[in-house]
Length: 434
Ligand code: FHN
Image 1 (cartoon, helix red, strand yellow):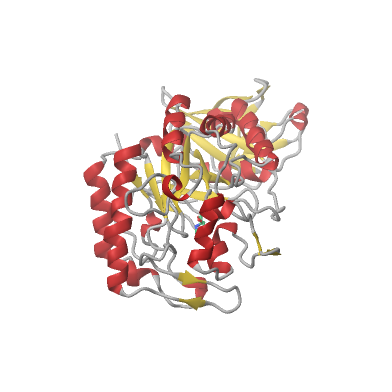
Image 2 (tube, helix red, strand yellow):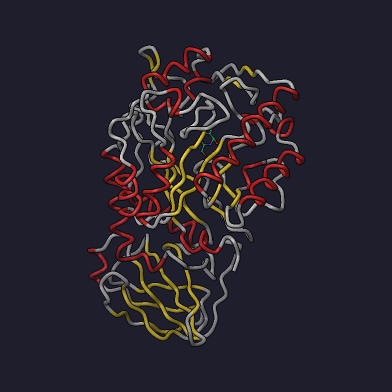
């Protein structure tokens, strides 16, 4: 069994960005912040560290309920959950020994949010993982201190000694704590290689191959099961990483040999942004999930809870709608493999090997006309049967020269993103490349 088996099987997880920035929620001193991501507040508005850190005194999310969050994860049909244990601002959501800048020591809330989430995740059968900003840390203990102005970038970087002090004294200590205290299923490290395309590579100056190895070795020494993503070092990811993370909201044209995922937002910001109304449709979110599964990849959909600890109604509705779709169509996602024939003009395909020398293809119909014939081009295996996954209605199938033909029933018009289960004889090997 591979360490990543559960990951490729589960396909769908929740990402949560939550921290001090969730209180101002994209507005600072009465004005919308310049950066589209609410969690970039401190850098975007060039807020002096001491002033930003005062937000901790107001962080008291009375409505935070770890069980309610896990119920939402389950309602959405998600199987794992990852949260910003520490984002770029350097603030920790657990009582860390490495710095007093944490939820227990610096806020009136004083509770161990990660501990409560870990316990709730266990109760609800959800796996728990952590986002950890290992490269950027704006607390001021020597992480890569970077301020970005949208038109006029300014960068302030620590000396190598300052970074090393941060690395040994905060980053590595906290990673150890997170594993020893909460036994995460994965880490999602965050870096990117070429700052805003200006050809300057600030990642590798600090995230050297030696440091990358040191961090991975620490994790491997403490846990046999914890996964590590490729954004630990976007410039030179080590062969030792377990899965590939795409850039934000990036949906590739092809799959990869390693397990991989896209993390995507519900609107534009990751952290809660009260002026971000750019919500994606449920249909497009399901298509992101299916599109990645059809290329053998995962989808991690982000929620930005409010400073009070609640999910926004617009998020809840979308999560429920995705979950309802998965309730009837989940068989076409969980534990499936990539499409054997790539993308087709009418939709996407996921696949599963049958028991007796047969293959099951899940045809995800996105763009089709009920009452007409549909060609599954490139599948030359003999068809056995086809049914609509949601309703059980059987569909006439026959093989032709270019592939398998199906007669789409008129009743498909009443379904949303319907899936047809097509069983064919023999093996149709999934393609890793799209
Ligand atoms: O800067 C972060 C951003 O705030 C957010 O955490 C995303 C999630 O993928 N990662 C970085 C930008 O790519």
